[in-house]
Every structure is written in C-alpha cells, then in structure tokens.
Amino acid sequence: MSARRISRREFMRDTALVAAGVAAGAGVARAESAETKQPPKPLSYNENMEYRRLGKTGLMISAIALGGHWKRLIAGSGWDRTDSGVEELDANRAEVVSRCIDVGINYVDACSGSEILTYAKALKGRREKMHFGFSWFEREPRFEDWRTADALLRGFDQGLKEAGLEYVDLWRVSAMMNGENTDAEVEAMMKAFEKAHAQGKARFFGISAHDRDWLKHVIEKYPQVNVILTPYTAASKAKPADSLFDAVRKHDVGVFGIKPFSSGSLFKDGAGAGGVHTEGDDKLARLALRYILCNDAITAPIPGLISIHQVDNAIQAVRERRELDLKEAAELREAAGDMLAALPPDYHWLRDWEWV
Image 1 (cartoon, rainbow, N blue to C red):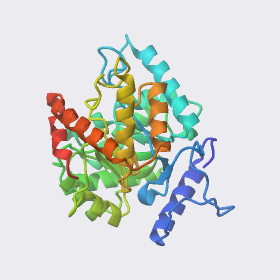
Image 2: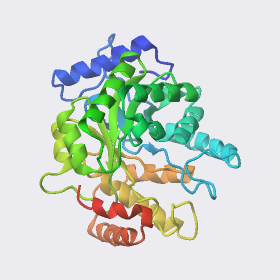
Image 3: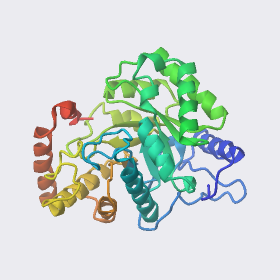
C-alpha cells in the first residue's frame, strides 16, 4: 500500500491477500502486490527502524509504535479535548506524528473518542503514512448499552463519520478490563466487525483487556482475533509455563504492549515530560523498551510519546544493543521495583502483571 489514498477495491484486495497467505500457512504472511508479487515496504519505511510482523494480519509494524495517550501534556488535562487546551494539544500531536513518520513509526493507537478525533486530525492529508488503531471505548462493550452487534456497528460508523475517516486498519474493541464480557458478547463484536469489514471500513480485528485468562480464552476460541492489546511493563515477565504468549504464538496473534512505563511511574519526573531527571529517565525508558522488545511475541510496545524528544529517545532504544548487560538489568530491576511501589492507587492493578 502506497502513501496515496487507498481505494475500497485495494482495501479488500490487500486484506484478502493477507488472509489467503495465512490460510496457506505462509511463513511470513505479508500482503503482496498483485502485479509484482513482491512484499511492499512497511508504511513510512526507515532503514534505521526495525519492523515486526503483526501476527496473521501480515502488517509490518515499527518496533516502537505510538500510544494514543497524552497524559500530563497539558496541565490539568486528561483524555478529553478541552476548549482551553485543544489548540496546544492539536499542535503538539501534529508535531509528534510528523516526527514519528519521519523516523519510521507507522502505527498509532487511539482508544477514546478524543484520541480518535485528535489523531485523525493530525493525520489529515497523510492518512496512508500510518496504520490506525481505532477504539471509541465509550461506545464499546465496557458499557452495557454497547454489547450488541447493531449497537457496536452504529457506534463505529458514528465514530468514523465524526473523525472523517473512511476506514481503519485495526478495529481493536475495548472489552471490559477484567474479562467479564460473555462469549455471546464477544460473538457480537465479531459480527459487528465482519459487517464493517465487508463494507470496507475495518481491515482487521483486535481486542484490548487487562485479564490474561480471558484473553487466552478468546484467542483460543475465536480465530477472527488478529491482535490483542494488554499490559506489559518494565517489571513484566513471560510465565515459564501456561503463558498468555503460548496462545499468542500458537494462534499467530499480534500483540501491542500497553503501559510500558506504568503510567509514568517508572520515571523520577513522573510522565518523563522533562525536568532535572530527564537524562536518567531517558535511560530508563530506553532500558524498558529494549527489555520489552526481547519478548519476540510482542509486536511493539506503544508508549504515549508526548514530545519530539521522547520520540527520538524511543528510537534510540531500537538502535541500541537489544539484550541488557548485567549492570543494565540490575538497574532496570531496581527501577521497576521502585515503579511498582510508586504506582498511584488507580494503577495498583499493574502489580498483578509481573507474570504474563
């Protein structure tokens, strides 16, 4: 897929080619050009970036992707687009997205209405430079009114219209965090996606949740699940037996790791927005990203990068030696312990993500 606007015909063709490659048991399932039979370069390809296959989607995704959150970017702001800060927010997000594209980051994950509207605006005129992950969680199965296929599709269509998007690469539905959605509700998600896909509005399907056992069940029961999003922090480790990643590998599912810095608790300056500890925080960020990327089942961690400086620091982590030496590993372990102790009350649940 090139940097021009994709047509509906190309959307269906390329997605079908990926699916066909997976069904045939292709070793590396990439969408091929019907004319050349050569795998296209990843979107926004940069020779200094590493690209990883997003499971059976076949998409080649940058090893660091852009998380949607902009926490602590503007004093007093959270996820909402507020009148007082929206111009500053839009300018910052456009600047950061531009830098991401320049250095080869080619996926952005938007998981609220405000994030979708903001990143759709930042990508206006250059939509084909980045894969777009879409979750308008306020209109998804975390809430009772959005647990039928008709309601989900209605909310999805409404979100596309409000954001001015013709399609998204990944509709990654936000399920209830603790895995409380029933199989019937999961099947409603699948039905809604299948309709959106048939209409050329969603290429692939994913689910985000914070419950390992539930995600494992969903992966094993529903082959339509292409991607999951789940926490994996600087303190996380793959279980030696019965790991979630066993199911991920068996069913060829892509993984985006959320909360790599535990909502900024890894850093002495909080969200790492800059301060007297910037140099040390930058090093911890790189150590954490290198550590997470050692898990080959994870396609990419998705930190919420809030400045060009943070983008460049994350890219440096990709270029550095992957394996931590003994001194670096000890430094990260100590920082991760401090991180878990410093978690704010609403993030204490991340302490349960030591073993995945």
